[in-house]
Length: 222
Image (cartoon, rainbow, N blue to C red):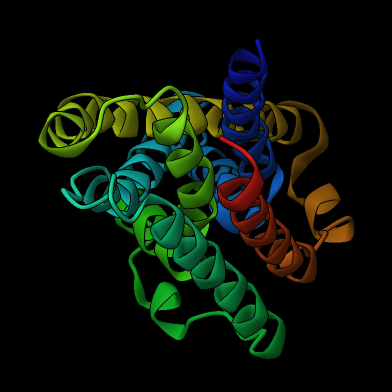
């Protein structure tokens, strides 16, 4: 029963992190609104959201997949999870100190939304936020040891990485899509410019909190 509760909590963390990324304008939903308004075609909105989702999904996979393929994850599970937590905390502290947005994102052509979304997710540590949660999911119910456990991880955890990335990206896209749709059809860009909210500090602090949670779960949880 405790393992089921822990598993459910970790998967809810994947979903809620997707909601959080979807709310954050830095993940790109304002670009989807702009694409629809500039092309004067409501079909451009879901197309832009799809491109943003694709880029975000690829960024999540790019971060999670290497961890899923670690043959030594069983022997050094706790150490790797603690290291991942420290890495996420370090990223959050860095973003707190350096609040300037990467200049290279401004150089990406607006039509290349998938590329922009991929680079933005990487630059802001969006994928790193999922690593402690993902490693916790992989650890739940891992009863085998040695080579058999490594084979199990290689087989099942790769699929888990894709599933975590897909669930997270879906939650992000739905949330960002709802916000973008409301602004596109009813509120407009003027409302967006007047009510723009910046989540940079909250984003950085959330990375620190997720990293700390990952370390705590590695030492005390599943």
